[in-house]
Length: 447
Image (cartoon, rainbow, N blue to C red; front, side):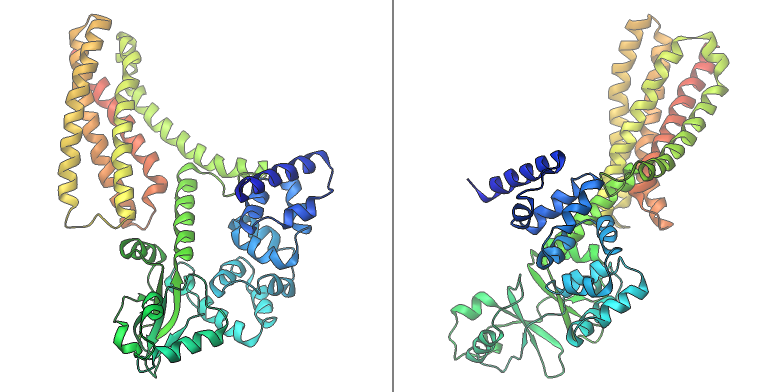
């Protein structure tokens, strides 16, 4: 049986024992799991079971488990721990991981945690905490290995052996001068296979790419993806080596950004098992916003109530126009939000994109206008209504794709996340445009 299958079986057993109230063997089995599996188990447990699971964890793995938990659950467990306990359980973590965890705590408690640490760890942590959490400085780990280019490879190898171990995800050693200015990197593969009598300057990559300490974490992730990096040095404004970022840090950023965007769009909470009162309050805001937009659309329908009363067929057909426009708008909005997130959309290509989406909207509008027109003509035996809905369909799909382009650009220009409110806005626009075009044309030609 594989390790994964064993872990799944253990987790299933623990869940059964928790639900039945039998706690024998839980302690041993739980603490034998991988910290990430334990964290997943805690997050997938109802709130009443979480505290018990946390209490029976061994202290030496609490830090790793805490590091894998969501922000909300980190805060929940941290508020019940004093500064000395936090310092103890996070002692084995890397500097950037400790910084991520203790930033969930009040400022006064952070000071206490720092004072409980060794001088070396405190200095490293204070340096990371001095930078914004969503910057390269906030992501970096200050535990780096650096050498000078005039050293022989034999000296470098002996230096590494003296260290006893090297930081995880280390695939390169950084090269600096006497002032600690970054000069390049030495690949470990090259180091291992090269003649030890050579000097670092003979085989190192001069001016190998470095990350600016002020770079946004999203841009850092994009750089790692483009360059296929495992690790990268971080330099300050003077070009001095201050730390490094590894691929596991980048993966965390990608996961957090994706989760945050999804939750914001959906209006959902970070915790699946959040309390009923919290879930109700959080979702009520988005339901209320949606209700407002629904009343806006309804108010435009009300303008044409006399037309609908005269031709009841319109009431049957008008949701079709609005729905098709909404889907077209959402498709374009998704393309725009994704392109903006990946840094692919700018001044040089936005006009081309507008033209492309306009042609797509027009093409799809004509195609589906013909389909809907033919179905309507056959269904209601009325060619005039068929022509009206076909023309309204073309208009609304054009409105849909154009709103899908311009709304995210507008939201970004006023520093709002296009992925959060974009969907609500564009669907409201297409609802209104669909109702006005269809019912307006019907009023002109039928009444």
